[in-house]
Length: 121
Image 1 (cartoon, rainbow, N blue to C red):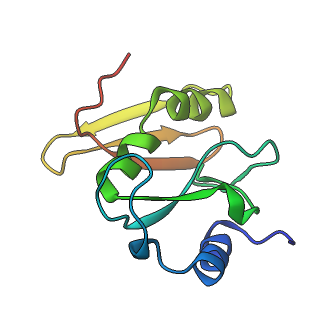
Image 2 (image 1 turned 120 degrees about the vertical axis):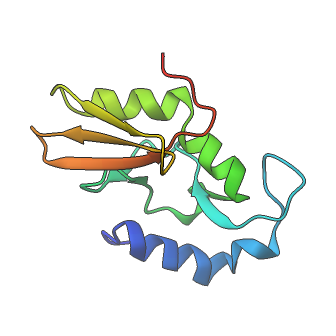
Image 3 (image 1 turned 180 degrees about the horizontal axis):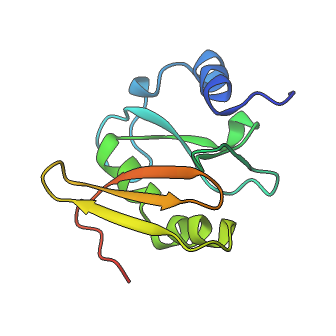
């Protein structure tokens, strides 16, 4: 598979495996909503928004929305974000919209993440 990019690979996963809603979540008994990258591809890629992805459809599993968000907010995922660059990251919390915004001015990226019950460490 060539360099598909984040959106294109998700289209490829849906084309090959069908909609995630046809499956149960791999983490709970609920119906899945999304195809979720399992973070296990040694040749993974990321885009400017630091969205990690694989070009291998075998690295995508069905997850419901709550499990997908929890998986993406896991400590492993957070460590991968902070280790990706050596710049100081700036975090702004907006409790009104229940998101936190992570900025890296060195890399010129930002990421919006739901606050949920994630505890900063």
